[in-house]
Image 1 (cartoon, rainbow, N blue to C red):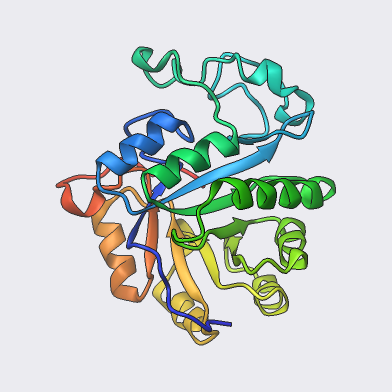
Image 2: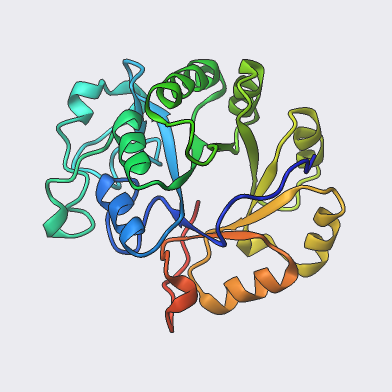
Length: 254
């Protein structure tokens, strides 16, 4: 499974620098770069009319002034939403970026990227196709090779079937046995684990499978160091400067 070196920095900016700017926005991406991030992660999903946007939740409620399911909302409506005021008033003009906009910005900043595909099984093929089109158009070949992650096997399978050579990462919540078959069959380059479920014993078992391992979402410096000591290669953090700050921020989900 692990047939090439892990190219990713020790800290991966989770949804951009989401401790300092509204998650998954261009502002969070710019802030991540400003704080020294080398790699960033973002979530992508489809709107009603098949525009790929950078957004984590299934619904618009938490991170915008909109309401309802993303997949039932046309992009023209989403494009007008305020995606920043929930975080801080100064971000009131921040919008939900399209994947094209996000990739263009990440490319300009020369960041490595991990795209987390958020889709239902019936959206998987369409989402994978649209993401690949965006990457072919907006991601320069001389930059770091993108990593495609998902907790949805259908999404990873759809990307694998394209045979475009993207490195795949399977997102695993807890000690599920299924991940071994998923990783071997696709095959996956890495697994991304919820740090709250990680024990040293489990990690030792995982490392025998010869797969790269990263942990999410780690906002405590001591916990990050513990995980590195145990053999984790990277951690996702809302704070790209986690290892150089005295104190981190409270943990959040992937």
